[in-house]
Image 1 (cartoon, one colour):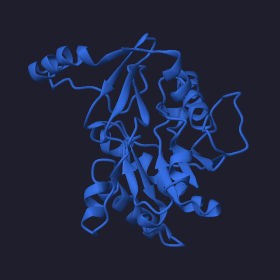
Image 2: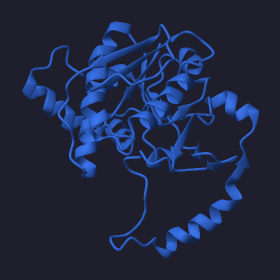
Image 3: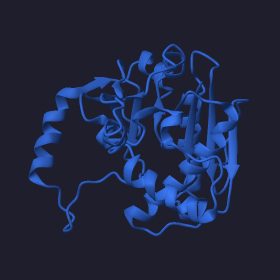
Length: 256
């Protein structure tokens, strides 16, 4: 079984809780659109989002997590603490694999079925994905490096996280830092490779990275003077050839 873990930022640090809740609702609808019922969703949050959508496979874990600062690392550690909470709770479902999903992204409806057909794999990286800008009728395909760019980009065998059955408060922070440093989406493949474990490449596009909606934690490439580097401008022009029409088929596959 595939368990999705969604860490959700607090209402108290959101620019618009209505927007955050709306993005999350689309995200969780996307997840629950799986072609098999062999999945569960764990949402870890300070406050339960204001949405109408319900599904029997969704579990909410509400906890008074300390609020992060405005810097990148603080926000990432907040996200990681919530992921760790979800990983511990996931034992209740006896999962084969875990996928961490950012609360504003969408995923393919074929993931849970694919995992159920490959229960012994160490996991997969989503190296090719889509990038979608709010309100656009176009969607961009990212042909490589998606796993370096988007946090919603890996599916990993649950046992490989090596989470102890019980964690004291001190151990909790220790494991938060271990996951932050070695199991984040940029490092997890390397971490596991040092143990002789190989993460495969997912053989289809598995996720959509949703940008330009005002609530992204990480999106942005401006330098310290607020200017966009020339190299980035060039790459953006080059990327024009990677745009596709947002078809009904894509909307159905990813819940867009």
